[in-house]
Length: 456
Image (cartoon, rainbow, N blue to C red; front, top):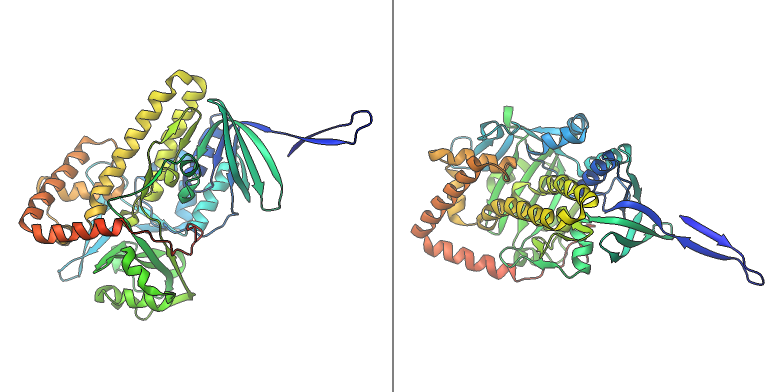
């Protein structure tokens, strides 16, 4: 903290706080914030990163996508991720075949996306990224919470910070990048945050020892199951641990009435195939978490001197594990915008518009599948995939995270949407019923979360 002390004749000593100056303040120490801080620091900018908690801290979202890997290489953390991750060759979805599931192997993607990904303990992954940002030259602080941002001009913002040791200070920054995650600090302050009116869900989950993994080459797969009220996941993690949980419609999860452990186990029993893999497993520390407030976005992504990245801008249902990739990819793109805007302010508005269009385009590709994932039509298409017109490979490319810049992938996703629409017309009663229920659930407000991501 910078302080000036002076004494005037006949007056007691007065302490005046002087704001610390930097080029960019990054709010939040998750994947988006750490990516932005590291890259900006490597470009030569003076960066102060502020994380209100201290690493390692709990976070859900343990399954990464193949398209993360080239970004890890550019960031310089590929070997570190490999050292803490479980090899993930694909995703599998239950099916009516001899094995009981179909594997969507990333090696079959349309383009040259990496043929695998990793699954990680998020507390280890997030700490590694934040430490890496510090190694790259960012002034990365922990236990420092942003209390207020007052923008004096397009190139001067004053940030009030409080620490977990009860100190306060102020930073003067030329640019503010908000990577505050689901706190959505600036979006909330600027009244930009809006609840998704098409989709809403909540989750209940825990970590288990001794759950059955897939055999052979599929051992590291994330497994996705369906049940009446949503879908379930099984994610293999280091140390023989399995992350297991259910993403549910809010009305269903409200029924738990404080019975978290029993309610999770009762929910998992609703899918016989999943339960067969879990029934002999041990719930670690008998700990079950609940999180809500899923699915929102912001009316805009940025303005003169500020930008929202990662979950601070928008959050989608995690069925396709898109969160970390969208956050880190968006952060990397935003860094280029911030760097150019600081050098050529007249280009800022155009670059921000382009950045927002790109981010929303990728989110739309995921959202089409997310909104309809619980529908009978989508369930049938995932149970019995067909590669006519390379549609199945296009879906695999989407699952790999290749949703931004490929016409080849985009055209196959459009073809999938066409097939879905035709199928829905032949099952229009079921389609209409599911859609009506989904929209009803989207209007509910779920406030029963008990993770650090929730405001209880």
